[in-house]
Image (cartoon, rainbow, N blue to C red; front, side):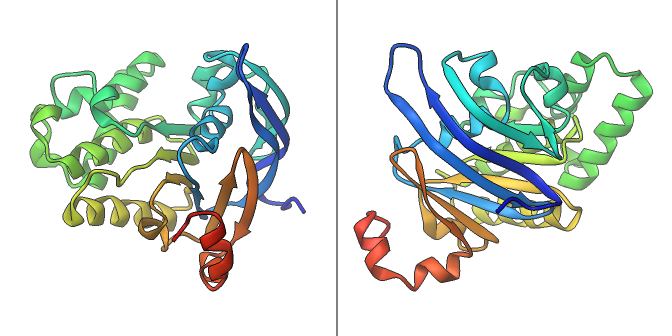
Length: 245
């Protein structure tokens, strides 16, 4: 059943890459505004493909055959330009080094709004807001590549937040981080939730994602479970059957 005030609604989504196998099969779910959903599953189950669909990269940039509906804040995304979608839903990639493209933290935060041709005053406002949110004022002129792993992840998130999206998609944001780095990212996500942001977090290691409001478990491109993690963690047979233990 779809939510009346859902931030994200997906209805009967199928996707097949060009000259490839079908990746997503009749995927449907509804995410409440201001919630954190962890997309859980083994490698190759369709997690990243689903995220690319939600952000419009599929089919606009990556091609393939897509059917079904994706609604963000109640609006169908089909036909909407990627630059417009990026102001509603932001994607943070798994490897921040592939996303960070400038020589200073400040320039990194300015990059996206400059590409939207926003006014200098508005760009400055957004930079200051995100610097304060990240507690990065002292790192304004630092090179992104000199930051710690956790700080790089935060900067990659901050660079997306300068577009002020209401929905944030993160592809394994805590992978390859030590406990301190994972805590930095987790605390940042919880702070965003308090501000009303809706977060979708792809995660291969479900133990990192137990703080999520809901889990969306994918098996071979299908939704196998959607609901609170506490419920599924009590079902040991399900976890063993799907290699989640």
